[in-house]
Length: 331
Image 1 (spheres, one colour):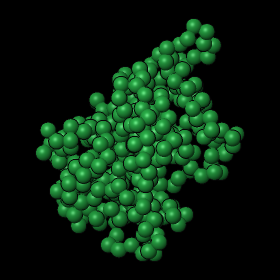
Image 2 (spheres, one colour; image 1 turned 90 degrees about the horizontal axis):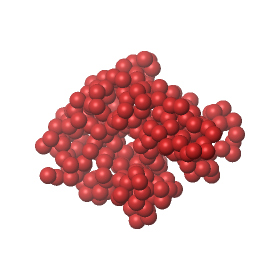
Image 3 (tube, one colour; image 1 turned 60 degrees about the horizontal axis):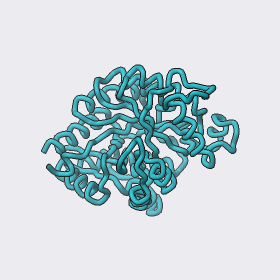
Image 4 (cartoon, rainbow, N blue to C red; image 1 turned 90 degrees about the vertical axis):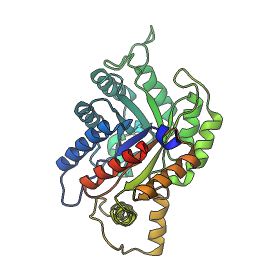
């Protein structure tokens, strides 16, 4: 069978809030999509932690993970990711230990080290401005102790959490997390959905430096990528203007709520180049174009798994995109 048919496909849901829409509608759309991709055979459904961002509704990530897990049957549900420097490791262990106890064998804990927001919001969450990047390995080690089997002399335990062994992934858009994941023998997920520039170097570092562990015998790399599939290329290109507008508004410091697609975008050449840089890994088109693009992407990256981000305005168009992808994989 082809690499396309053999590679697991997963979903990253940024819980987008539409212009003129409500957060309640976003949660209903996410639930409907999760149920659909569960039935279609997708492997994972992850949600990302962001704070004080007008267009993303997944700030209380673990709460939303629990809701999605409760609404689905077999798909793994997790974080892509939890920004560990924002939280005491004990609290994350308790949250994800609870989730794993409620939905055994279905919870993933993807971890990042970025703030997931702006500096002012980061200060509001962390209080200590020194917390974060430099002590990430120590926080990770502490978290893993709380999720592993308790040591005889361990005074603080995660209840729930201790002994649940929730699978941990390291997420990143640079070489730092790739090398840390390699050193610890953990699975690695690269965020090519918004920062594809360092993709191949990060994958190289991860694979070359990987050390086998109790978790993995060999490296396992998942790549996040933007994908929009529609019934034809022209309609897919039209739908893609929603994600282009989102990155354009991010560059301009405006609201990132999802905008309806448009026929033409009013942007400078510099803005267009910046948006294209963010979306450089995107596959957009009708079924044949998407099939060719996915095959090429898998051949180039040798990814063990793909995590798709489909950022379109209408929830029905998003569900249709995943239907098309499922049809492509079935051949």
